[in-house]
Image 1 (cartoon, one colour):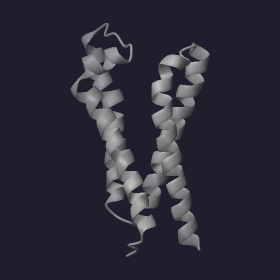
Image 2 (image 1 turned 90 degrees about the vertical axis):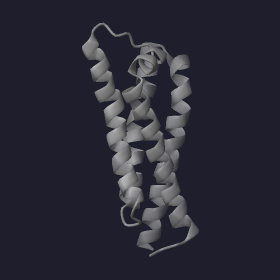
Image 3 (image 1 turned 180 degrees about the vertical axis):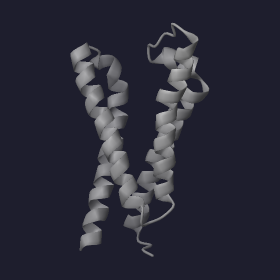
Image 4 (image 1 turned 60 degrees about the vertical axis):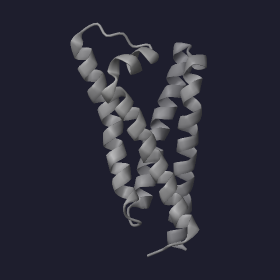
Length: 135
């Protein structure tokens, strides 16, 4: 088993991404009204609350479970980093394009920075770990 600082650093990055998704998912799953209103959502029907819990809360929690599963084993770390970078990168790209096309860039900016940092860190850690394994 590899116990170098770099290998542990990659797992710490993955753990941080997993915990971030736990926070995002639990926020919407446990407090859908407050979380939705902070994002500008308004519930027109009771089913909307259920849909917010499942869609905006459930998907991040599912991703978090997969990422934390990958953290538990050094052999799964690279896959977890790739998954985190891919999902967060897609979310970032869609948010950026949508913010520009919808004219809400100032409001979206507070989420663009953390998503950019998570994408950069997870992609960099995945690149480093993949290169190291090939060498």
